[in-house]
Image 1 (spheres, rainbow, N blue to C red):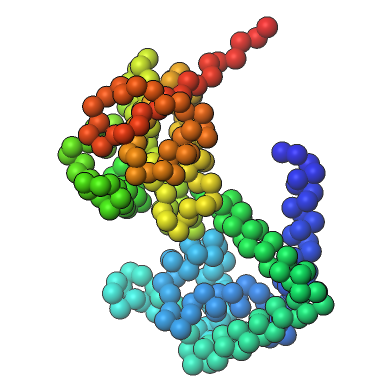
Image 2 (image 1 turned 90 degrees about the vertical axis):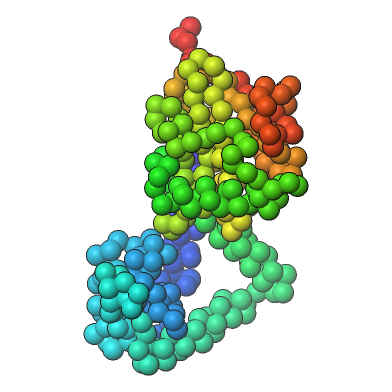
Amino acid sequence: MDSDLVDGVRRFNRTVTQRIGALDDAFLARARPLGEARVLWEIGAAGRDVRELRKRLDLDSGYLSRLLRGLERDGLVRVEPSAADGRVRTARLTEAGQAERAALDRLSDDAAAALLAPLSGGQRTRLVTAMAEVERLLTASAVDIAPCPPGHADARFCLRAYFTELGLRFDDGFDPGLSISAADEEMTPPAGVLLVATLHGEPVGCGALKVHGEAPAEIKRMWVAPAARGLGLGRRLLAELEAHAAGLGVRALRLETNRSLGEAIGLYRAAGYREVAPFNDEHYADHWFEKQLPGPRTLA
């Protein structure tokens, strides 16, 4: 990694943590640090399951438990079994906790206004625009991509969402029975692999690879959740599948797609896939693509 880039990130982190008061024991002049204040905000008026809270905040379960115990001691939070499932714990704000959250909201608005106040109108717009871009890129960096068994709940969620979206977007709907298969066993090593992307523990995308020995491998089941689009996730999934294929000795990749999926067609072309003559009888295909992967490097 470029050391200048790393230094730039560290400078940014130091400036932001100091400017927003993350270093203070009493965040926004209240009697608790930023961590506890953030947990209060995330619990919200309706309460939140502790497991979901941990995922949303990307916190270690032990650390989150300590934060919740501190808030319980202060009479701001109750942690109790969920009414729907006794095995699940739910955190809820007490009346005092709701009042504290409201006070933190007001003080946070004041702090944001104070940060913007010294700047000109143009500078304020530039700062907020830059913050939105930083937020988007930080969200992109928080996405994790890993192989996932096709039977896993995250995989099933992605595949159901994929089929549903195709059914809505294709002119004549989508029936998996009419499409070339990508069955569970075909997306399981050594026959293939299914990659699932997660953000804060929730599935937001997938892509699969079917391997055919020395013949070209197939890219299948490429999908990104609407809420995660614009983060470059489709390109990341495609690159990960290509790397996985190259590691297996695959030298060519093929895929087909429907004319309704214009963004997918643009992605494949930008990633170096060239349109070729039809190589299968996929019922829903209008475009067929192929890409040659680089062979192993040889020493001169």
